Length: 422
Image (cartoon, rainbow, N blue to C red):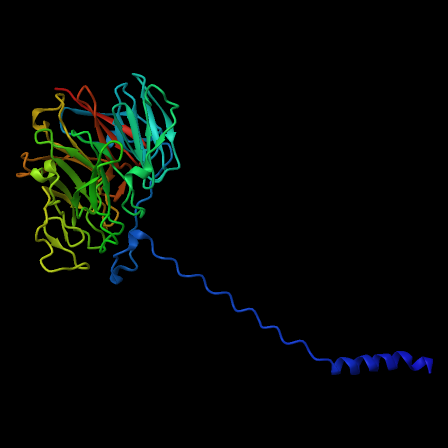
């Protein structure tokens, strides 16, 4: 009997196992959901289906140091009597520049989030980073204090020229900055009235605005109080100046993308200065976005009846997709008299075009009321039309006490000095 025990035990275990209630089947894990499709980048917004395969895309910045020996300065062309030289290097991505009483120059960036300080040592220049890791900051000086404005932050560095390690005062809350980032990068400047002028671009290529806090130019008291909207319908201005004879604000504005190679053109606009501005009465000028562009070009995507009625049209257009940046009225005595009170406009250069356009500086002569405008090439050679390539992208100006003109180049991180001698 003993020899049959193992067999009997095995049979009994099998019978008991067959009588046991089986565990309920575990449900299979659901297949992992496919990740949501990525939204197209902001710069593709408004691209028609017919151009879905287009390879046009924004041109990447270099954002690394370019040595002076690598800059082909000999390619630049100016009118007779003018000279260009390298004033400084080593500030990658530098854009708008401002100068203090000590001669120090400060400049913001877009891609790197830095603000630089450049010290003029006479025969050479040195630089340091004041602050970085900001969202596309710009900087301007006022009463010895450096104001830095990014998309989501406003900082003030009191007396920075004498105290380079001063801690900033955070003024962000006072300015009530709108949050959307596209076209919200800044150019800031104090006007002759002592107020800070700030643009807030449209958060799209072309769209009905999500709120009325975009596509406008504002001005503030220096402490962020007293905000006024002084212009609306402004798609993307990142450069302006005040006319030396009238005090009126003139500003560049970028035309929308994906409407073809030849338009709509970028603009140079004049903000009239009627009594409402002085008295704070209403009637804010409207510059067309999103319904009307350039010199009364109706938008094909965002439509309304009579889209250009009531629109303040530009003084002049300055070319298709040119990326018109800095605007500067020349008030010095070094240049020939024809340039006195003329506006220089830096055209950073196109990306939304099958062949490149811009990459140069033009001068605009006009009557103080904006009539009779003429656009003339001034400095060329940053691009080679034969090969459709470029090496530099001029962006902003700074007039020096001696009348020379500094020009920042975002692509090379250099600043050039333009002078004139008979």
